[in-house]
Image (cartoon, rainbow over all chains, first blue to last red; front, side, top):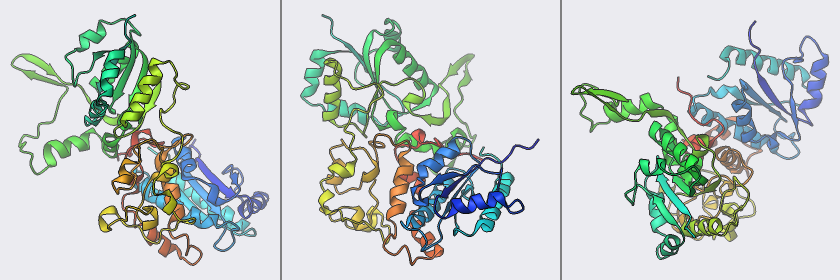
Length: 132
Length: 326
């Protein structure tokens, strides 16, 4: 049997998590079973250290899901966007495919997009396989 | 009563840590009055066999500097560990991997290719590379194996305390020696330096604006820095916010931004990730709502070597430890 892609999704409690719960109930577009999301209070609270910790513990990919521009109460989404971009550059230097970490934004109502993105990300990580 | 025995040893290092001991100046007389230095290859004539001849635990404390990157270094630190009551990782390289740890962007093969074949000054038509065993005139010569990966001292042997810095400043060395002699050491595993960040003790702290924003990133050679003003406020990356204090702000006072040699502050697992985090937070923060993804990308790309910058002293101790070679 093929090893399942180990993907970590950090999702914002305010925009993404409600949508994720919805996507779980919508079987055709759902991401149920694929990932066990980690809920954070804001995408701006997802520290790069935490993302590297996930990789060092065997994650194949890490998706940071936050609010779209102008929808975050704390502007944490902008921080997350910049951190993930800089982290991608750093990962490339470490010999790790930069696409293994991604920032995506979702509104509360976008459960279909969320499910689709997670499924797409998991598929992409399946293609890459584990690190090393 | 016999004086406590002390060993000093060096591994993958530059010699600056040895220099730091000499920098104790007159204080070194107090040290040699209080302890017996029984092993210090750089300064005194003792051999490995002298250490081997000692009882386990006979050495009160071994100060070991340098990263661990060869078989010989691994063997020597294991020997010293066995013979010592306490082991102190002395300086950035033993503590975090240090500058020699930047070799973890490469491996033995690529380093040998470069050093013994690639460099323009090398004349090696037969492409001879170091071998651990070589037959010469019917005899076999051996040299220690050079490892693919540079390690911190605590990745090879258990370490009791850490004296950070490139090199550790004399006041912290004296504090550590005094604490050992008086038996007033903190809990095992402690870094023998303050728990504050460099930003907290920085002489330029008052000039740091309430809200920092980096509109563009300048490298130190591109600007003439105002020595009285926070370097971050001048657009030059300084790792003070993510680095432990205790260095005496030597670089800051010499108008150079911090590069992190004292390692992460207490509780941080990965100094580079912490540094990356705060730098990314400050970049373009004022205009962040108006910036497109492309503009943000352009701003981020102004840091050409994030891994080398953020892990300048700590790559082997980082969560990823090394570059994956394909």
